[in-house]
Image (tube, rainbow, N blue to C red; front, side, top):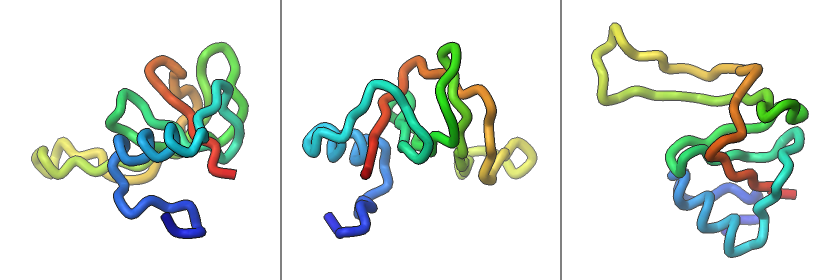
Length: 91
């Protein structure tokens, strides 16, 4: 792995495997942590967890759908649920 902490592969499973092997998993998310949800989606924690949710920044691409149904882009979300998430602290 490079010194910048970025994975060669961006799949969520690669993030999870690396984090487990490097003991980077944390129970309580903090600003700047990476989260993996349901082993298939990656985002950034952008604030403190309250009541089982946390603010996040996430990006999506929907290559398998028609243009009209796509919601591609980067989003700042206020209430991402903690359920089925693991949190990685890179620092």
